[in-house]
Amino acid sequence: MTMKKAYFVYLLFCVLVQVPDRMSAEEPFVFTTVWTAQAEFAGYYVAKEKGFYRDAGLDVKIQHPSLASSVYHRLETDECDAGMFALMSAMELNANGSQLVNIFQTSMNSSYLIVSRWGKNPLTQKGIRVAVYNSEPNYLTLMMDKREKMNYDFIYFTEGVNVFLSGAVDAMVVVSYNEYYQLLQAGFKMDEKTLYRFRDHGYNIQENGVYVKREYYETHPKQVKAFADASRKGWEWAAEHPQEALDIVMKYVKAENVPTNRVMQKLMLEEILRLQKDPDSGKREFRVRPDMVKKANQLMLECGMLKREVTYDELMGMGGTDSKKGGLK
Image 1: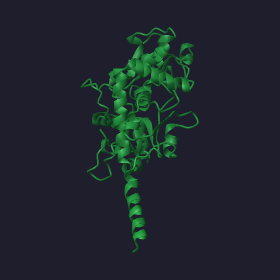
Image 2: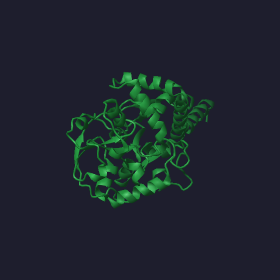
Image 3: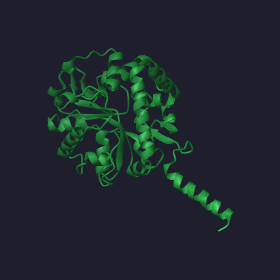
């Protein structure tokens, strides 16, 4: 072999060896949130704007879904590398054949509650008209309705709280970091007897986390770990610098033309940070809890929402793969 050919073979070998481990800005890591721009995603915005992703070797692009293109559609069609899903949504998708792996978890508690329009305890109002968003399955409400034999008449709608304030429904399912504060800002007064907080009635199941396809998880281990580490750093920074984090949130809100205000986003960020604390340790642990996966399986199987059990190992990328591989912490 001539010297020229030997050099060419050497260069080709170096390229082939290095490509699998390469984290290049030429291949951005695309992440789709679960909703439009808001403080619910502050830690990711912070990680982007403060350069935490860049320092980790990632060129992260943050997308927001639309009614015409959901986060699931974008992930399945490879329009993004990672997407945000609630734990029970990810479990149902896996049970139905998708292979999603959790790489980062923010929510540690359920944010859902039912608000009564007429100042009554929702548990005493069987057969009432209950407004629920149609953007994603409302697992907890359906479970509670079936288990407590409430026989609710569900009214599905897209956004806002006007259907509730107008009196068109008797109650509404809201989350504590968004519509709950919208109602307060609209002047609607609530006390605890008019609220049904799911987490206080045996339904405290974690919500949003970040998921990738199993194939991506197995072929891009450095990318998913780098994203998780930098995202955690972003959230920890947001918790320590809430006002500066809000400045960053409002930048994204304005860029996406989201109708909101800084007061609303401040309340949202405070509640999101509170929901991130583990109910037992009181710390932000950024992990999926095996006991909550077990509880979700129990409830979803009991109510016919799962075709099969979805294990913690499966969600963390361990089930059905090399036993030495583990979920990202």
